[in-house]
Length: 232
Image 1 (cartoon, helix red, strand yellow):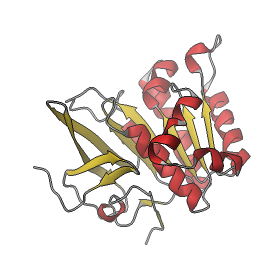
Image 2 (cartoon, rainbow, N blue to C red; image 1 turned 60 degrees about the horizontal axis):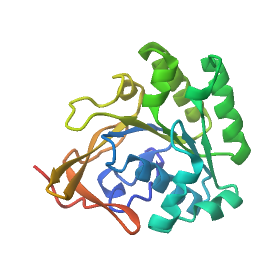
Image 3 (cartoon, rainbow, N blue to C red; image 1 turned 30 degrees about the vertical axis):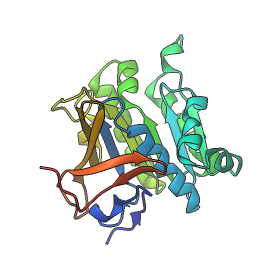
Image 4 (tube, rainbow, N blue to C red; image 1 turned 90 degrees about the vertical axis):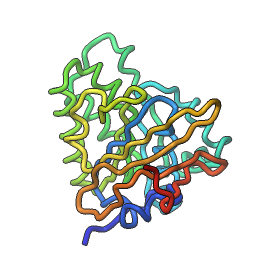
């Protein structure tokens, strides 16, 4: 029986047998604006509440912009940062003047993890990272190396990927889903001014999970999944 990591996404853990398997790497994928970043931040905040420090690595968003979740949903991000239970950093890959090797990127991740003894990590996003690393092979190699490192240290991680609206793809480069232990697909349909959001677990190793599409909403406390309401 694998120990589970409670995600803190209201209503979600009941459809994945109590949470993510410890040390797993889970791909959270979907189009822009669907709630992927919210999912990642909420995952780290719940970890901090449970005494599991978390690291958020942004490849694009400014650190200060991510603090808006503190005001939108009441997440105590600043408090947890002061207590060294959450660390949010930005890798400014596109601004680097020289090519950083995969090994150097790994060392940077190691340093950040050790600073707070992280047990949860969110990488946002593999899409930006893949464009920087130039090809699918380098991205797959880097993510595979990270997954083994995380597994060794008991770190449960989320990798965020962007896909176009109404796409049949599961990731930007088509390699992230093969490296990951799980795949959570977030999507939506727009009806006039209303967004109908839905969540589907496409894969989660070592777990009995519901593979039905279920609705979710982003409210005052973040993401809430409605596991008993099936979408056809």
